[in-house]
Image (tube, rainbow, N blue to C red; front, side, top):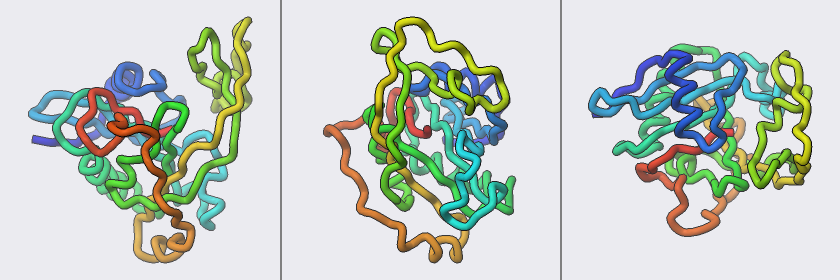
Length: 214
């Protein structure tokens, strides 16, 4: 039996560090929703402002009206991810009635194309701008820790030997939370991207590890 409820910071951190491909918990303030099946903790879904303080601007929204789905961190589970997200979105709307839009990104560098959003009828709006990231011995580093976008924390020194690598933009999906907002963004819809390979781990099936969100 699926149950979602508010999660502690400790539980959210555990889920992100163990069951999300980034292995990190976002440092910004977040709405944390825990996921249980048969009273066993399966992970967490996190909403936040993310790194972009102009997240809502392209849609004519203030920051208080828009947020980002920043983590879907799940271990092995039975319920479809789209069902989990739909339940989490309902909780978010009740908790933050002023919100009108949720944005999320699927990272092609991690093999993601946004299958869980497609299953939930999110609107695909194309890719974000190309960017860069740091890699050390083939491992991806948390870019935000080494730039000025670290939510007020002192930026770290880039490790010796780390290489700056150009990366393509992420797939961007949006979910309007009211009918007027859906009408307003309908013209932005683009055809859904296809999975990079059959059997992608982020298709809407119970995965061993969650991995969507920025």
